[in-house]
Length: 174
Image 1 (cartoon, rainbow, N blue to C red):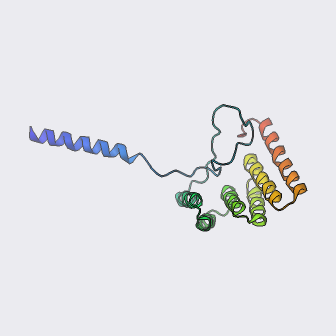
Image 2 (image 1 turned 180 degrees about the horizontal axis):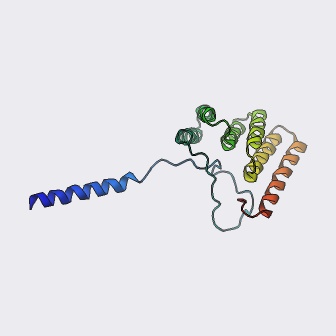
């Protein structure tokens, strides 16, 4: 009888440990869209949350992106930039990573570099109109900060055009 109660105890312990193993306290980086960026369209409209695009399937890239976001939130922007640059060495054609780095440079006040990085992201974005629109908005914000109101207006116009054309085509995430 003692063996059965020990077996029951061990089985219960293993089941409880197995249940805890599936719970992660670390956020998963699956998106290039930080929570602080407002939605592109439909502001104020209550509906289903917009699905976040998959950032990468590479676990090392995801870990570096997580690290970069945590560092950025902690005010360690230099460390965040280093993590993003390292992720880009692993996946140099990942348009979302270029966008993340452009956002960081914009936050650091490095406006010209933010514009260059956003253009790089756009060149790699392919048919991802959502990412292209985000890049043009970022470029517009950087141009505003540089005092280039005409350039900013042009960039915001391109973002709006991409949003409109994306909304008209089914299957695109706008």
